[in-house]
Image 1 (tube, rainbow, N blue to C red):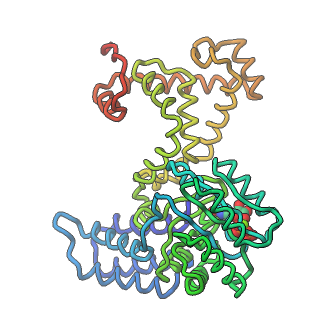
Image 2: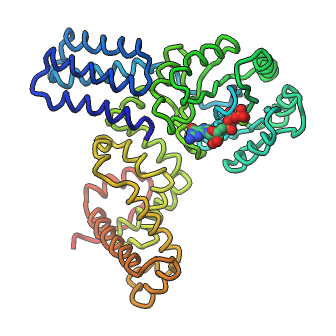
Image 3: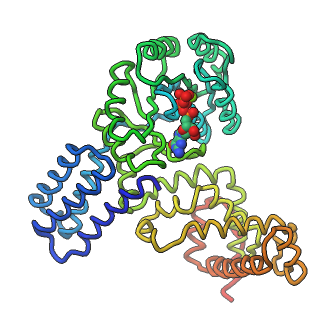
Length: 451
Ligand SMILES: Nc1nc2c(ncn2[C@@H]2O[C@H](COP(=O)(O)OP(=O)(O)OP(=O)(O)O)[C@@H](O)[C@H]2O)c(=O)[nH]1
Ligand SMILES: [Mg+2]
Protein backbone atom coordinates (compact mmCIF):
# COMPACT_ATOMS: atom_id res chain seq x y z
CA UNK A 1 0.00 0.00 0.00
CA UNK A 2 0.95 3.62 -0.53
CA UNK A 3 2.97 5.16 2.32
CA UNK A 4 3.41 1.88 4.13
CA UNK A 5 5.99 3.17 6.56
CA UNK A 6 4.01 6.23 7.60
CA UNK A 7 0.85 4.17 7.98
CA UNK A 8 2.63 1.72 10.22
CA UNK A 9 4.08 4.35 12.52
CA UNK A 10 0.79 6.26 12.73
CA UNK A 11 -1.02 3.07 13.61
CA UNK A 12 1.62 2.54 16.27
CA UNK A 13 0.71 5.91 17.76
CA UNK A 14 -3.00 5.08 17.82
CA UNK A 15 -2.27 1.70 19.38
CA UNK A 16 -0.19 3.35 22.06
CA UNK A 17 -3.18 5.48 22.99
CA UNK A 18 -5.47 2.47 22.87
CA UNK A 19 -3.34 0.42 25.22
CA UNK A 20 -2.55 3.16 27.73
CA UNK A 21 -4.23 3.05 31.13
CA UNK A 22 -5.00 6.75 31.40
CA UNK A 23 -4.98 9.71 29.08
CA UNK A 24 -2.95 12.42 30.76
CA UNK A 25 -0.53 15.17 29.83
CA UNK A 26 2.39 12.78 29.75
CA UNK A 27 0.73 10.46 27.31
CA UNK A 28 -0.26 13.37 25.05
CA UNK A 29 3.32 14.60 25.12
CA UNK A 30 4.63 11.16 24.14
CA UNK A 31 2.02 10.81 21.45
CA UNK A 32 2.86 14.19 19.95
CA UNK A 33 6.54 13.36 19.92
CA UNK A 34 5.85 10.12 18.09
CA UNK A 35 3.54 11.84 15.65
CA UNK A 36 6.30 14.30 14.90
CA UNK A 37 8.81 11.57 14.31
CA UNK A 38 6.45 9.68 12.00
CA UNK A 39 5.51 12.71 9.93
CA UNK A 40 9.03 14.10 9.66
CA UNK A 41 10.24 10.72 8.47
CA UNK A 42 7.61 10.89 5.74
CA UNK A 43 9.11 14.22 4.68
CA UNK A 44 6.24 16.37 5.88
CA UNK A 45 7.28 19.99 6.34
CA UNK A 46 8.49 20.80 9.87
CA UNK A 47 6.19 23.77 10.25
CA UNK A 48 3.17 21.72 9.26
CA UNK A 49 4.18 18.99 11.66
CA UNK A 50 4.53 21.42 14.54
CA UNK A 51 1.22 23.04 13.76
CA UNK A 52 -0.46 19.66 13.67
CA UNK A 53 0.98 18.42 16.95
CA UNK A 54 0.20 21.75 18.62
CA UNK A 55 -3.41 21.37 17.58
CA UNK A 56 -3.48 17.79 18.77
CA UNK A 57 -2.01 18.77 22.14
CA UNK A 58 -4.30 21.74 22.76
CA UNK A 59 -7.44 20.02 21.60
CA UNK A 60 -6.70 16.81 23.53
CA UNK A 61 -6.24 18.72 26.75
CA UNK A 62 -9.02 21.25 26.31
CA UNK A 63 -11.84 19.60 24.44
CA UNK A 64 -14.17 17.28 26.31
CA UNK A 65 -14.98 13.94 24.73
CA UNK A 66 -18.48 13.70 23.27
CA UNK A 67 -20.97 11.97 25.60
CA UNK A 68 -20.43 8.24 25.59
CA UNK A 69 -16.92 8.55 24.15
CA UNK A 70 -13.82 7.56 26.06
CA UNK A 71 -10.87 9.90 26.40
CA UNK A 72 -8.81 7.51 24.29
CA UNK A 73 -11.32 7.55 21.43
CA UNK A 74 -11.40 11.28 21.69
CA UNK A 75 -7.65 11.72 21.24
CA UNK A 76 -7.57 9.23 18.38
CA UNK A 77 -10.38 11.11 16.68
CA UNK A 78 -8.53 14.40 17.07
CA UNK A 79 -5.42 12.92 15.46
CA UNK A 80 -7.51 11.61 12.60
CA UNK A 81 -9.19 14.98 12.09
CA UNK A 82 -5.94 16.92 12.18
CA UNK A 83 -4.33 14.58 9.63
CA UNK A 84 -7.33 14.99 7.35
CA UNK A 85 -7.17 18.77 7.78
CA UNK A 86 -3.55 18.64 6.64
CA UNK A 87 -4.61 17.24 3.27
CA UNK A 88 -8.10 18.56 2.86
CA UNK A 89 -8.84 20.42 -0.34
CA UNK A 90 -11.27 20.72 -3.21
CA UNK A 91 -13.77 18.54 -4.98
CA UNK A 92 -13.17 15.51 -7.13
CA UNK A 93 -13.15 15.74 -10.91
CA UNK A 94 -16.70 15.76 -12.20
CA UNK A 95 -18.03 12.81 -14.17
CA UNK A 96 -19.29 14.82 -17.12
CA UNK A 97 -18.33 15.61 -20.69
CA UNK A 98 -15.31 17.89 -20.57
CA UNK A 99 -11.88 18.76 -21.90
CA UNK A 100 -8.89 18.07 -19.70
CA UNK A 101 -5.40 19.31 -20.39
CA UNK A 102 -2.41 17.72 -18.67
CA UNK A 103 0.68 19.80 -17.99
CA UNK A 104 3.92 19.22 -16.15
CA UNK A 105 7.67 18.86 -16.37
CA UNK A 106 9.61 16.03 -18.04
CA UNK A 107 8.89 12.49 -17.00
CA UNK A 108 6.42 13.31 -14.25
CA UNK A 109 3.87 10.86 -15.60
CA UNK A 110 1.68 12.98 -17.90
CA UNK A 111 1.29 10.48 -20.70
CA UNK A 112 0.80 7.55 -18.34
CA UNK A 113 -1.77 9.56 -16.40
CA UNK A 114 -3.57 10.43 -19.64
CA UNK A 115 -4.02 6.70 -20.26
CA UNK A 116 -5.10 6.06 -16.66
CA UNK A 117 -7.58 8.92 -16.77
CA UNK A 118 -9.01 7.62 -20.03
CA UNK A 119 -9.48 4.25 -18.39
CA UNK A 120 -11.13 5.91 -15.39
CA UNK A 121 -13.72 7.73 -17.49
CA UNK A 122 -14.37 4.82 -19.82
CA UNK A 123 -15.10 2.59 -16.84
CA UNK A 124 -17.68 5.19 -15.84
CA UNK A 125 -19.25 5.00 -19.29
CA UNK A 126 -17.85 8.24 -20.68
CA UNK A 127 -16.13 7.83 -24.04
CA UNK A 128 -12.65 9.33 -24.25
CA UNK A 129 -10.55 10.86 -27.00
CA UNK A 130 -6.84 11.37 -26.35
CA UNK A 131 -4.93 14.11 -28.13
CA UNK A 132 -1.18 13.72 -28.54
CA UNK A 133 0.06 17.30 -28.35
CA UNK A 134 3.58 16.47 -27.19
CA UNK A 135 5.76 17.61 -30.08
CA UNK A 136 9.07 17.24 -28.22
CA UNK A 137 9.39 13.66 -27.15
CA UNK A 138 10.04 11.30 -30.06
CA UNK A 139 7.47 8.51 -30.15
CA UNK A 140 5.13 10.43 -27.84
CA UNK A 141 2.29 9.64 -30.23
CA UNK A 142 3.10 5.91 -30.22
CA UNK A 143 3.17 5.83 -26.43
CA UNK A 144 -0.23 7.47 -26.22
CA UNK A 145 -1.70 5.30 -29.01
CA UNK A 146 -0.67 2.15 -27.19
CA UNK A 147 -2.31 3.34 -24.00
CA UNK A 148 -5.44 4.33 -25.93
CA UNK A 149 -5.66 0.88 -27.52
CA UNK A 150 -5.30 -0.75 -24.13
CA UNK A 151 -8.21 1.11 -22.55
CA UNK A 152 -10.46 1.50 -25.59
CA UNK A 153 -10.04 5.24 -26.08
CA UNK A 154 -9.73 7.04 -29.40
CA UNK A 155 -6.56 8.88 -30.16
CA UNK A 156 -5.57 11.76 -32.40
CA UNK A 157 -2.07 12.82 -33.33
CA UNK A 158 0.03 14.08 -36.20
CA UNK A 159 3.42 12.42 -35.91
CA UNK A 160 6.08 14.76 -37.27
CA UNK A 161 3.96 17.87 -36.79
CA UNK A 162 5.77 20.54 -34.74
CA UNK A 163 2.84 22.84 -34.10
CA UNK A 164 1.13 21.61 -30.93
CA UNK A 165 -1.66 24.15 -31.22
CA UNK A 166 -2.59 22.88 -34.67
CA UNK A 167 -2.71 19.29 -33.41
CA UNK A 168 -5.02 20.31 -30.59
CA UNK A 169 -7.32 22.27 -32.88
CA UNK A 170 -7.55 19.40 -35.39
CA UNK A 171 -7.85 16.82 -32.62
CA UNK A 172 -10.73 18.53 -30.88
CA UNK A 173 -12.60 18.72 -34.20
CA UNK A 174 -11.90 15.09 -35.09
CA UNK A 175 -12.78 13.82 -31.62
CA UNK A 176 -15.79 16.05 -31.03
CA UNK A 177 -17.99 12.96 -30.63
CA UNK A 178 -15.96 11.80 -27.60
CA UNK A 179 -17.45 12.92 -24.32
CA UNK A 180 -14.16 13.48 -22.55
CA UNK A 181 -11.16 14.89 -24.38
CA UNK A 182 -7.75 14.59 -22.75
CA UNK A 183 -4.79 16.55 -24.09
CA UNK A 184 -1.28 15.24 -23.39
CA UNK A 185 1.34 17.97 -23.66
CA UNK A 186 5.13 17.98 -23.72
CA UNK A 187 7.36 18.45 -20.71
CA UNK A 188 10.47 20.53 -20.03
CA UNK A 189 13.26 20.27 -17.51
CA UNK A 190 12.07 23.38 -15.74
CA UNK A 191 9.20 25.80 -15.82
CA UNK A 192 10.45 28.09 -18.58
CA UNK A 193 8.89 30.86 -20.58
CA UNK A 194 8.48 28.73 -23.70
CA UNK A 195 6.64 26.02 -21.77
CA UNK A 196 4.32 28.59 -20.22
CA UNK A 197 3.65 30.07 -23.65
CA UNK A 198 2.95 26.67 -25.15
CA UNK A 199 0.51 25.76 -22.39
CA UNK A 200 -1.24 29.11 -22.73
CA UNK A 201 -1.49 28.82 -26.50
CA UNK A 202 -2.96 25.35 -26.29
CA UNK A 203 -5.33 26.43 -23.53
CA UNK A 204 -6.49 29.37 -25.62
CA UNK A 205 -7.53 27.01 -28.40
CA UNK A 206 -8.86 24.17 -26.27
CA UNK A 207 -10.49 26.21 -23.52
CA UNK A 208 -10.15 23.21 -21.19
CA UNK A 209 -12.46 22.65 -18.22
CA UNK A 210 -9.52 21.34 -16.25
CA UNK A 211 -5.83 22.13 -16.43
CA UNK A 212 -4.25 19.36 -14.45
CA UNK A 213 -0.67 19.54 -13.26
CA UNK A 214 1.01 16.14 -13.14
CA UNK A 215 3.57 16.01 -10.34
CA UNK A 216 5.99 13.26 -9.36
CA UNK A 217 5.68 12.74 -5.58
CA UNK A 218 9.30 11.64 -5.35
CA UNK A 219 10.33 15.29 -5.11
CA UNK A 220 8.73 15.37 -1.67
CA UNK A 221 8.18 18.81 -0.18
CA UNK A 222 9.50 20.41 -3.37
CA UNK A 223 6.16 19.50 -4.91
CA UNK A 224 4.72 22.48 -3.04
CA UNK A 225 6.77 25.23 -4.71
CA UNK A 226 6.37 23.48 -8.08
CA UNK A 227 2.61 23.43 -7.77
CA UNK A 228 2.70 27.07 -6.70
CA UNK A 229 4.82 28.13 -9.67
CA UNK A 230 2.66 26.31 -12.21
CA UNK A 231 -0.42 27.70 -10.57
CA UNK A 232 0.83 31.28 -10.87
CA UNK A 233 1.95 30.79 -14.45
CA UNK A 234 -0.91 28.88 -15.98
CA UNK A 235 -3.74 28.73 -13.47
CA UNK A 236 -3.78 25.05 -12.60
CA UNK A 237 -7.18 23.63 -11.60
CA UNK A 238 -6.00 20.37 -10.09
CA UNK A 239 -3.02 18.13 -9.40
CA UNK A 240 -2.32 14.48 -10.03
CA UNK A 241 0.41 13.20 -7.69
CA UNK A 242 2.13 10.30 -9.42
CA UNK A 243 4.44 7.52 -8.25
CA UNK A 244 2.99 7.47 -4.75
CA UNK A 245 3.86 3.78 -4.74
CA UNK A 246 7.56 4.32 -5.17
CA UNK A 247 8.50 6.76 -2.46
CA UNK A 248 8.37 7.33 1.27
CA UNK A 249 8.17 11.05 0.52
CA UNK A 250 4.59 10.94 -0.69
CA UNK A 251 3.31 12.34 2.58
CA UNK A 252 5.57 15.36 2.19
CA UNK A 253 4.52 15.90 -1.40
CA UNK A 254 0.82 15.59 -0.68
CA UNK A 255 0.82 17.85 2.36
CA UNK A 256 3.02 20.45 0.66
CA UNK A 257 0.76 20.60 -2.37
CA UNK A 258 -2.36 20.71 -0.21
CA UNK A 259 -1.09 23.75 1.67
CA UNK A 260 -0.67 25.70 -1.57
CA UNK A 261 -4.45 25.32 -1.83
CA UNK A 262 -4.03 23.35 -4.99
CA UNK A 263 -6.69 20.72 -5.39
CA UNK A 264 -5.30 17.19 -5.47
CA UNK A 265 -7.62 15.21 -7.69
CA UNK A 266 -5.89 11.86 -8.17
CA UNK A 267 -2.90 9.92 -6.98
CA UNK A 268 -0.95 7.54 -9.20
CA UNK A 269 -0.10 4.37 -7.32
CA UNK A 270 1.75 2.23 -9.86
CA UNK A 271 2.70 1.73 -13.49
CA UNK A 272 -0.40 -0.26 -14.33
CA UNK A 273 -3.25 1.49 -16.08
CA UNK A 274 -5.62 0.92 -13.18
CA UNK A 275 -3.25 2.43 -10.64
CA UNK A 276 -5.02 5.76 -10.32
CA UNK A 277 -7.15 6.66 -7.32
CA UNK A 278 -9.44 9.64 -6.88
CA UNK A 279 -7.95 11.52 -3.96
CA UNK A 280 -10.08 12.10 -0.94
CA UNK A 281 -8.39 13.23 2.28
CA UNK A 282 -10.82 11.43 4.59
CA UNK A 283 -10.54 8.16 2.80
CA UNK A 284 -6.82 8.42 2.35
CA UNK A 285 -6.18 9.03 6.04
CA UNK A 286 -8.62 6.42 7.28
CA UNK A 287 -6.93 3.86 5.08
CA UNK A 288 -3.52 4.96 6.26
CA UNK A 289 -4.63 4.57 9.86
CA UNK A 290 -6.09 1.17 9.18
CA UNK A 291 -9.69 2.20 9.63
CA UNK A 292 -10.48 0.73 6.27
CA UNK A 293 -11.90 2.19 3.13
CA UNK A 294 -15.09 0.36 2.40
CA UNK A 295 -16.21 3.02 -0.03
CA UNK A 296 -13.01 2.61 -2.04
CA UNK A 297 -13.37 -1.13 -1.98
CA UNK A 298 -16.93 -0.95 -3.21
CA UNK A 299 -15.91 1.36 -6.03
CA UNK A 300 -13.07 -0.85 -7.20
CA UNK A 301 -15.29 -3.88 -7.02
CA UNK A 302 -18.05 -2.13 -8.96
CA UNK A 303 -15.69 -0.96 -11.64
CA UNK A 304 -13.80 -4.17 -12.12
CA UNK A 305 -16.59 -6.63 -11.74
CA UNK A 306 -19.04 -4.77 -13.88
CA UNK A 307 -18.16 -6.73 -16.99
CA UNK A 308 -18.14 -9.93 -15.04
CA UNK A 309 -21.59 -9.44 -13.61
CA UNK A 310 -23.00 -12.37 -15.46
CA UNK A 311 -20.16 -14.58 -14.29
CA UNK A 312 -20.73 -13.46 -10.76
CA UNK A 313 -24.45 -14.08 -10.97
CA UNK A 314 -23.87 -17.57 -12.26
CA UNK A 315 -21.40 -18.06 -9.45
CA UNK A 316 -23.89 -16.90 -6.83
CA UNK A 317 -26.56 -19.13 -8.31
CA UNK A 318 -24.27 -22.13 -8.12
CA UNK A 319 -23.22 -21.22 -4.65
CA UNK A 320 -26.79 -21.15 -3.46
CA UNK A 321 -27.81 -24.43 -4.99
CA UNK A 322 -24.68 -26.14 -3.77
CA UNK A 323 -23.29 -26.68 -7.26
CA UNK A 324 -19.86 -25.16 -6.88
CA UNK A 325 -17.45 -26.24 -9.60
CA UNK A 326 -13.75 -25.63 -10.10
CA UNK A 327 -14.82 -23.18 -12.78
CA UNK A 328 -16.65 -21.23 -10.13
CA UNK A 329 -13.63 -21.18 -7.91
CA UNK A 330 -11.59 -20.10 -10.94
CA UNK A 331 -14.03 -17.25 -11.67
CA UNK A 332 -13.86 -16.20 -8.06
CA UNK A 333 -10.09 -16.13 -8.12
CA UNK A 334 -10.06 -14.23 -11.38
CA UNK A 335 -12.37 -11.62 -9.91
CA UNK A 336 -10.11 -11.20 -6.91
CA UNK A 337 -7.08 -10.89 -9.16
CA UNK A 338 -8.81 -8.31 -11.27
CA UNK A 339 -9.57 -6.18 -8.29
CA UNK A 340 -5.87 -5.72 -7.78
CA UNK A 341 -3.50 -7.43 -5.49
CA UNK A 342 -4.91 -9.08 -2.42
CA UNK A 343 -2.76 -6.86 -0.32
CA UNK A 344 -4.37 -3.72 -1.64
CA UNK A 345 -7.83 -5.09 -0.99
CA UNK A 346 -7.03 -6.27 2.49
CA UNK A 347 -5.65 -2.86 3.35
CA UNK A 348 -9.05 -1.41 2.58
CA UNK A 349 -10.90 -3.64 4.99
CA UNK A 350 -11.39 -2.20 8.46
CA UNK A 351 -9.03 -3.81 10.92
CA UNK A 352 -7.09 -5.73 8.32
CA UNK A 353 -4.17 -3.38 8.01
CA UNK A 354 -3.28 -4.28 11.57
CA UNK A 355 -2.88 -7.87 10.53
CA UNK A 356 -0.45 -7.01 7.80
CA UNK A 357 2.46 -8.55 9.58
CA UNK A 358 0.67 -11.78 10.25
CA UNK A 359 -0.58 -12.65 6.78
CA UNK A 360 1.88 -13.52 4.08
CA UNK A 361 0.12 -11.90 1.14
CA UNK A 362 2.82 -12.72 -1.35
CA UNK A 363 2.59 -16.41 -0.54
CA UNK A 364 -1.19 -16.29 -0.92
CA UNK A 365 -0.90 -14.54 -4.25
CA UNK A 366 1.73 -17.00 -5.45
CA UNK A 367 -0.57 -19.85 -4.51
CA UNK A 368 -3.44 -18.31 -6.45
CA UNK A 369 -1.18 -17.86 -9.46
CA UNK A 370 -0.14 -21.51 -9.27
CA UNK A 371 -3.77 -22.62 -9.07
CA UNK A 372 -4.51 -20.62 -12.14
CA UNK A 373 -1.77 -22.34 -14.13
CA UNK A 374 -2.95 -25.75 -12.98
CA UNK A 375 -6.55 -25.06 -13.93
CA UNK A 376 -5.46 -23.87 -17.34
CA UNK A 377 -4.24 -27.37 -18.08
CA UNK A 378 -7.53 -29.02 -17.13
CA UNK A 379 -10.36 -29.78 -19.52
CA UNK A 380 -13.66 -27.99 -19.17
CA UNK A 381 -15.27 -31.21 -17.99
CA UNK A 382 -12.69 -31.64 -15.26
CA UNK A 383 -13.28 -28.14 -14.03
CA UNK A 384 -17.04 -28.77 -13.97
CA UNK A 385 -16.68 -32.04 -12.16
CA UNK A 386 -13.49 -32.06 -10.13
CA UNK A 387 -14.40 -35.41 -8.62
CA UNK A 388 -13.26 -36.90 -11.95
CA UNK A 389 -9.72 -35.81 -11.25
CA UNK A 390 -7.82 -38.81 -9.91
CA UNK A 391 -4.69 -40.89 -10.56
CA UNK A 392 -3.57 -40.54 -14.20
CA UNK A 393 -5.48 -37.31 -14.66
CA UNK A 394 -3.63 -35.73 -11.77
CA UNK A 395 -0.34 -36.70 -13.35
CA UNK A 396 -1.37 -35.38 -16.77
CA UNK A 397 -2.51 -32.06 -15.33
CA UNK A 398 0.64 -31.71 -13.26
CA UNK A 399 2.79 -32.35 -16.34
CA UNK A 400 0.81 -29.89 -18.43
CA UNK A 401 1.14 -27.18 -15.81
CA UNK A 402 4.75 -27.95 -14.98
CA UNK A 403 3.99 -28.57 -11.31
CA UNK A 404 4.07 -31.61 -9.02
CA UNK A 405 1.16 -33.98 -8.45
CA UNK A 406 1.16 -32.70 -4.86
CA UNK A 407 0.38 -29.19 -6.14
CA UNK A 408 -2.63 -30.49 -8.04
CA UNK A 409 -3.83 -32.34 -4.94
CA UNK A 410 -3.44 -29.17 -2.90
CA UNK A 411 -5.70 -27.38 -5.36
CA UNK A 412 -8.29 -30.15 -5.10
CA UNK A 413 -8.13 -29.97 -1.35
CA UNK A 414 -8.65 -26.21 -1.44
CA UNK A 415 -11.57 -26.74 -3.79
CA UNK A 416 -13.18 -29.26 -1.47
CA UNK A 417 -12.80 -26.90 1.46
CA UNK A 418 -14.26 -23.97 -0.48
CA UNK A 419 -17.10 -26.14 -1.67
CA UNK A 420 -17.94 -27.10 1.87
CA UNK A 421 -17.91 -23.46 2.91
CA UNK A 422 -20.02 -22.41 -0.05
CA UNK A 423 -22.47 -25.14 0.76
CA UNK A 424 -22.98 -23.92 4.27
CA UNK A 425 -23.41 -20.34 3.07
CA UNK A 426 -26.00 -21.56 0.59
CA UNK A 427 -27.98 -23.21 3.35
CA UNK A 428 -27.77 -20.32 5.77
CA UNK A 429 -31.19 -18.70 5.52
CA UNK A 430 -30.09 -15.27 6.70
CA UNK A 431 -27.22 -15.25 4.23
CA UNK A 432 -29.51 -16.34 1.41
CA UNK A 433 -31.89 -13.50 2.18
CA UNK A 434 -29.08 -10.99 2.16
CA UNK A 435 -27.71 -12.25 -1.13
CA UNK A 436 -31.16 -12.29 -2.61
CA UNK A 437 -31.57 -8.67 -1.68
CA UNK A 438 -28.24 -7.72 -3.20
CA UNK A 439 -29.02 -9.37 -6.46
CA UNK A 440 -32.43 -7.80 -6.77
CA UNK A 441 -34.50 -9.24 -9.52
CA UNK A 442 -32.38 -12.34 -9.82
CA UNK A 443 -34.21 -15.60 -9.43
CA UNK A 444 -32.61 -17.96 -6.98
CA UNK A 445 -32.83 -21.70 -6.94
CA UNK A 446 -34.52 -23.50 -4.13
CA UNK A 447 -32.38 -24.02 -1.04
CA UNK A 448 -33.13 -27.71 -1.12
CA UNK A 449 -34.06 -28.06 2.53
CA UNK A 450 -31.79 -28.22 5.51
CA UNK A 451 -30.42 -31.70 5.15
N1 LIG B 1 5.58 3.51 -10.20
C1 LIG B 1 4.93 4.44 -10.91
N2 LIG B 1 5.44 4.83 -12.08
C2 LIG B 1 4.77 5.76 -12.79
C3 LIG B 1 3.56 6.34 -12.31
N3 LIG B 1 3.15 7.26 -13.23
C4 LIG B 1 4.07 7.23 -14.23
N4 LIG B 1 5.05 6.34 -13.97
C5 LIG B 1 6.25 6.05 -14.79
O1 LIG B 1 6.99 7.23 -14.96
C6 LIG B 1 7.67 7.22 -16.22
C7 LIG B 1 7.38 8.50 -16.97
O2 LIG B 1 6.01 8.55 -17.30
P1 LIG B 1 5.43 9.35 -18.55
O3 LIG B 1 3.96 9.21 -18.48
O4 LIG B 1 6.09 8.98 -19.80
O5 LIG B 1 5.84 10.83 -18.17
P2 LIG B 1 5.62 12.18 -18.99
O6 LIG B 1 5.33 13.24 -18.02
O7 LIG B 1 4.63 11.96 -20.07
O8 LIG B 1 7.06 12.39 -19.61
P3 LIG B 1 7.46 13.37 -20.85
O9 LIG B 1 6.50 13.11 -21.93
O10 LIG B 1 8.86 12.99 -21.19
O11 LIG B 1 7.41 14.76 -20.33
C8 LIG B 1 7.17 5.98 -16.92
O12 LIG B 1 8.15 4.99 -16.80
C9 LIG B 1 5.92 5.59 -16.17
O13 LIG B 1 5.68 4.19 -16.20
C10 LIG B 1 3.06 5.91 -11.02
O14 LIG B 1 2.02 6.37 -10.49
N5 LIG B 1 3.79 4.97 -10.37
MG1 LIG C 1 4.74 12.24 -22.12
